[in-house]
Length: 440
Image (tube, rainbow, N blue to C red; front, side, top):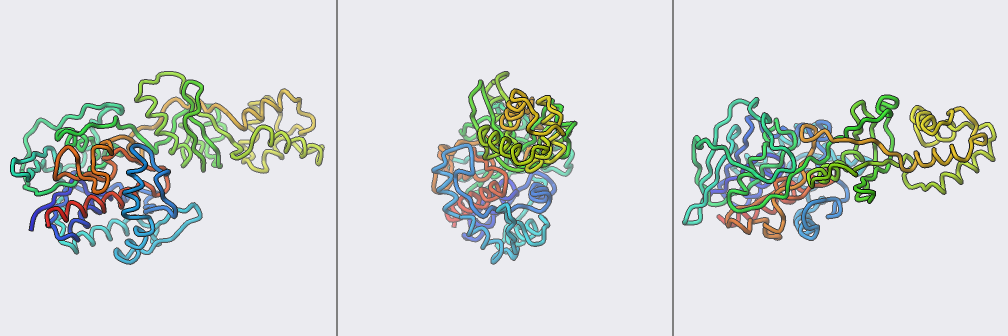
């Protein structure tokens, strides 16, 4: 039986190992960190949001959406739900947001099920085995160079600055070499570097001829120097955020939004972060800003009409009382003060110039974003190996035959809500099956 080595025991890597084993291959799964599945255990507030009720290519950024769509069709969200429920024995529940979680509300349930499935098909798991070199032999087989890792403290000490494109392998010699007939590279990106995501996967890919779309943190909170962060700390509401570069709106994100002491978190802020970081990586040093509409789906005109109608119905209705119909009262008061309006002043007594100022604040307030919280808080990495460098049907490398790539190491990342896990299940299934069949 010929040998497949899967590098990286995250969601994509474990899926690939299971699928290669199901295809009849002998499989070794190598994980750099001594502990396996750390990101799975951390995800979804330790509950693990395994997928979403509706998933398509429009939920993703990075490479060709046609290729993404093709991979997602190969193993759909519906199939993933059935896989967890029927094959892995993990019942799922659907929440109002469209997110699917295990009924146990415990990410350990997901990790245990994946490990058990890998064991059933004979996968040999080795943790604390960091791959620092891969070499293609003349006959077509591979040699995988492994560094033995016993101390988790060695991870995350020196992560490449985001935006970089040069990736170098460690200069030390491997402690051992493992022969392989096929390799699946599923090393992830750079998010949460202390879990073992230190960029070595990019170096392995470039060592065999791949290029790298400069990685940047994605799904990470936004930092801001904004008085609102103190005045309305802890307030949560739905907003629509816009990212602007040089006075041009380049992206929007909607959803729940949390005002924190450092800036902003919540799905809307996290979804927008990749655009800020990509602009910084492209060299932008000015002209970047983030604005918020605190009345998503409404316009200045509709808000004005609502204001005038409310003032006519209730001459004593205050500004805070009116805004409080859809805004938290503390935030409503702060926004009114920003427009130089006493929040308890009746609507009918507010001067037009002050009302116009408040309408601008409600629909397009500058949030004074100045940074993001980077890889330490990023849930995923944007960038990686371009999709045009892999086969769109199998995810086999076009630069090195016998090498497959899946998961976050590719230039694909999804928005918040289970989409990145779905990419892991889908791409891991495609790559693992193809690699397993190639050697069976």
